[in-house]
Length: 469
Image 1 (cartoon, one colour):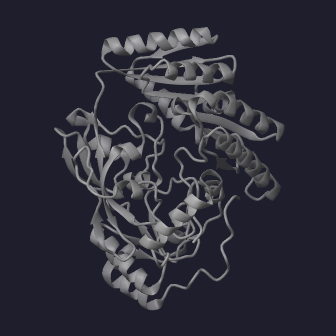
Image 2: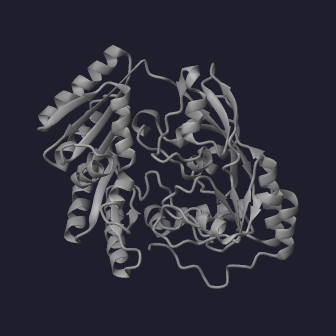
Image 3: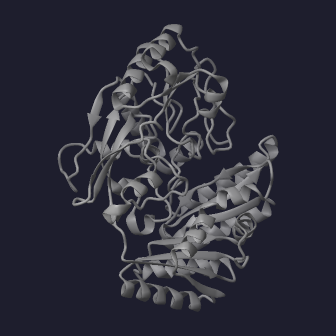
């Protein structure tokens, strides 16, 4: 896999006195059991488990601060954990240490419906937040697929299916509560919609993947629930026709809420997994938000564009249960693809290019997968130029894994040559550290390293992620 090899000897044994102090404070909310450690040392990446030495379940910001202070005094790593759905090795304990599980920090602290904001603890998941605010007429739109925690979504600068209309976590986080590497508790902003007061610390921590501080509370923007929602599914004779339909739709300024691409391999997998009967051709899923008239106008424009690109069918899903079934199937594409090769793990890629280069990038990547006989599927939030290749590999077959990594490296090089990025939403973690250097250059990486040294001089916060120490 594409990550730097860590020098031997970096994993320190957990000091007895540190464990004793944690047990005194947290009692039965500390675990050193092998099962618990292994559970927290594995995410959805294809890496082998890298368990921490202990797991602590925190319930307040102050408790997170206590863990960090104790670990700092002993020079022991601290790794934040939300729901374990990350894809690039973000939560793996490369050097051992203590994992802080934030899942019990799951309170919605305040909802200000009149200002369209909510403040939540880091362990609140996106589905939980939307369930708790459903009676306010508002919703939180960021939807990465998995029911991820808001803290984890902030840490990885997540986005997902709604990003083309509502933006990513970067645009939707107003303020944070963060525990720094020395155990201080800081707040990075307010509920005001804009500010020119000092350095933008909120944006520094959004996307920092737990390497600069641990996010414990998040204030996010909320949006009015649309008056009308309509979805459509449309099949095409080729991937190029589908993607060019999206490009033209975006260039014409049609404000689609969501537009997702599935290649024929993914459609075939979804049909088998969710017992559906979609045409096994490249597919687009659209969703439109707005007034009744606006939704109809948007959909008609898109339908006309699709017809110009020889769309095979354009079917409506106006009823909520139909829309839910379609989007549920889309979110299950990852698990559906795993069933195409039982026992396999997925190498899940993630790049993003300017919308004008999207079709070229996808088609070249598709050809590379075919040339290398990969079992793969391509899905994408193509409205903003972001797509993923899911390659099924035998984790015990080094040649198989290397072949997939070769496809991934060429895909990233292709995206960078098109002025794109190595990751549109998954983040860097361990896997994309070398790619980050290719994208930004040594000068920018050194500037990031200066930030890391300033924020975390002992290198205890999620070490071995994003940049080399």
